[in-house]
Image (cartoon, rainbow, N blue to C red; front, top):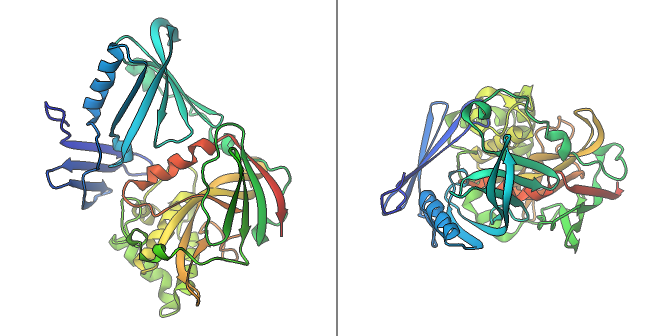
Amino acid sequence: MESAAGELRTMRSEQQLGAAPLVTTWRFTGEGVEVVDEQGGRRTARFEPTPEGDWLAPGAAARAAREQMEAGAEEISVTTLDPSQGLRAVTSTRRLRGQGPVEAMGKVVPASEWVVTIDSFPGVESVEFLDASGELVRGTTDMGGIVVEMLASDRAVATADVPAPELLASTLVTPDRPIRGARGVRTGAYVLRLRQGEMPDLPETGVQRVERLDGRSARVVVDLTSPRLAAGADADDAAYLGSSRMIDATDPKIVELAREAVKPVAGEPAHVRAERMRRFVYAYIDAKSLDVGFATASETARTRQGDCTEHGVLLAALLRAEGIPSRVVSGVLYVDEFIGREGVFGFHMWTQALLDTGDGPRWVDLDATLDDRTPTDATHIAMAVSAMAADDEFNTMASLAPLLGGLEIVVERVE
């Protein structure tokens, strides 16, 4: 909701990524922003600073873009807030490519063609066909070979029950050669290459080193035998112990599960308790299902279902409830078979705990989707790390967008 002058008063987002919708409301005041998250009867509130910089409310931004279009501008940039991305101001830039008729839903209408980039999706371009009033007629977004198409339609067509496209299979990566005994691999060297676009910067972690080879490729070495110390600032970063809508370590159910998990090893060092919690989450989520989109840790604690994302955020929450800093990692993992494909890397999420093993803190990989024998292996290739702080889950997913469907992996060596 905005004032007549275009000042943002309230903003609301509803995400249905799990069994229960996650509703977030932002109320803008002179002192800052009151943020309320609601899911499954639980309500949490926090206060955040107003985003800095020159940005417009969503409605005002749309009007400004339309006015520039009507004035004949060939490049239009506006900065605004998008409820799906929280309190991060995002800048979209449209560049005019041409004019001409376009077909959509059996009709041919005159339209202008625009190439659109958004700074929160680096490396991803969209093409939009807009009518004379600036409304979208047709649009496509290419994410590394996965093409998403949008069409203007009437309500009946838009809400019709049609089979969902199978996207997961198109994101799987078949390497140049299979990896035997992947769960026992302790060191691995890989070359990652994008078929198009620029390779984003990949993170270095306790066990991962990255060497950029050129604009589209990088060499990644994962060595479990030689972990490095964490950056000094990580130990002091409150985000790794904080609570957010995805990882609420203050949720009574999360606290209860954390205590239950470590009860057999109470009083033991943090690394022992962390591994115990990893095994607990593996057993606790007893409905291993791909049907869950991206549920919060709180929802997962109650439904006991999900895939790698739910295992990752639930373990991160339990660790924080026990006072152990944690973050989640998005990347790929080699599997012998998945949804009918053999010997592939699939996009995956797991957890890291900041643990002091004697000579300083290290980020230790903990994959709660693996059984008691295997906390991790060197076929886990990290592509993004995140504390999952307020609204950060979208930014984590956005960083992977250029890699979906367009990634190639060469296995140089595994041991």
